[in-house]
Image 1: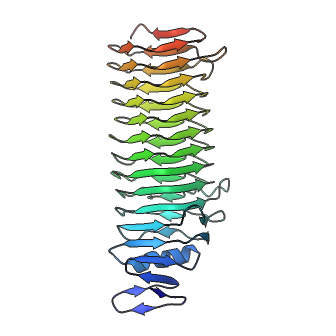
Image 2: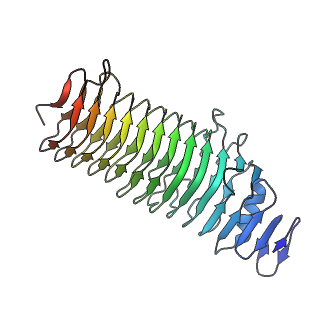
Image 3: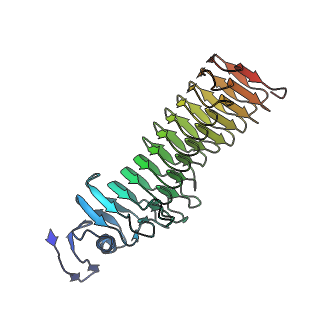
Length: 336
């Protein structure tokens, strides 16, 4: 290994200030965004790994991924990227494929008015993205914003977002994306928002957010997850052909589970103690749906109904348990 504290220029293309260079892995020794960007530049067009040892990194410019197949890896949450005074996005992966950010902690500038997303694709196609074991705190915008059209096959695993000024995680650009073991808390907007056919939210936790806890659109699966004490609906899917199964929803300011669109499968969920005048499981415009094996519990002054269908005919409602609601257990309107 070669340790460089100044600048080394080698034939063939390496110009890498302040790094340890070993093949396609570069260890950053200048703890700034400038130092990190220089390391990424030094990887070359084939990509590789930039390693950030434990410590505090001053972020005063955007860390930009220049190449496909690039990994930015920390040493765990002790690798701290301090963007509390930066007016911009700390990490930008725009138009690059098969990139990763993992094992680090980023803190932003919540409340500053900078409209800052801690990790973003800038709305440009960047498929096969992986975020792994990351703590994201105090974003002035979103924790992760992934919106490029066609940005598919991404994986967000053990990403923990707290106190974003808008949405915790917003991944809406493509299809077949996965959020697994992710957490969103104390965000002003939705906790976790995922869209795109074949996309999955699994084993995630959303709490104390200012809007919907877990949000999908069409062709999504939301399973084995928890929505607790969110201001809006606990789990919401606005689009056809979703599966919502094995979740726990409680103390929502809106309905517990809300499904809008045809052919929904809502099974084996627990929905309890959601807001007064609301419903444990609510289907609207959802014909040909199945609601089975759910447990809906109210309390005095809480939910009006356990299960409520409107404009949803040809549905199968079977094997559900509903108790302690202000109006009744199951309601089917004249069009259901």
